Length: 107
Image 1 (cartoon, rainbow, N blue to C red):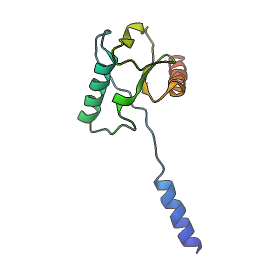
Image 2: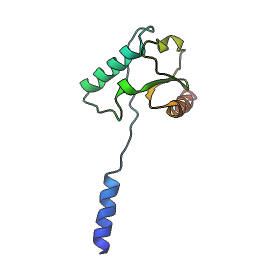
Image 3: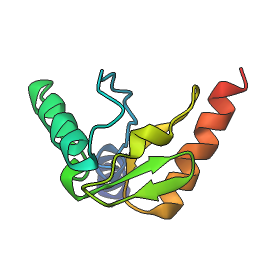
Image 4: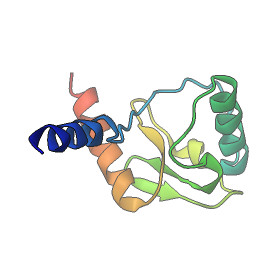
């Protein structure tokens, strides 16, 4: 019937996944390793009772369109004022976040 089709469509719309990018302020030394940064972010998310789409421990760090996946690296040493940093799944997502940062810094 038409009513059950409308009901199924309404239910499908309600179940759509929404993804929010939430800024997180951390005060860390510039020589922190990626591994320690991942642990710190994981702990902060757990403390705030936020469920990430993907575990930060398995993600790459996107910095100005580049990615860092070496747990021993200290990627924050490369930062300049206005840099956009985000945990990302892959290089494509790092580029997307970088473009978003350019837009935000333009204002």
